[in-house]
Amino acid sequence: MPEDYQMIDFPPLNTQQLKELKELENMSDQDLDYSDIPEQPNNGQFYYTG
Image 1 (cartoon, rainbow, N blue to C red):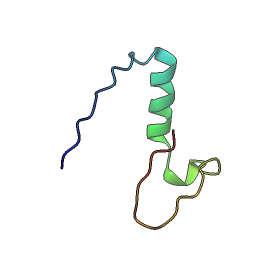
Image 2: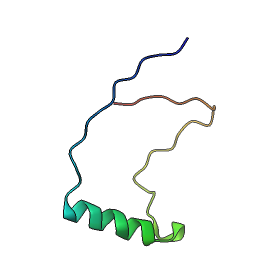
Image 3: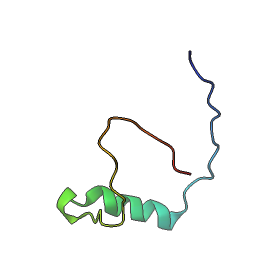
Image 4: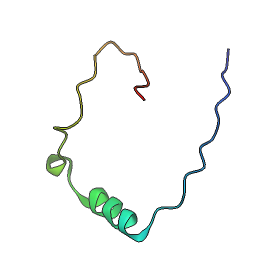
């Protein structure tokens, strides 16, 4: 049974946010810091936390 989803209309990103995204895009995976991301259970399920 398909669910209906409501589209969220976010405001456009500002110049600083676009700059940060571009810097992240150019970083290698080894340079990204994942230490503040909680570990996910490896049971194959997805859940919404917020």
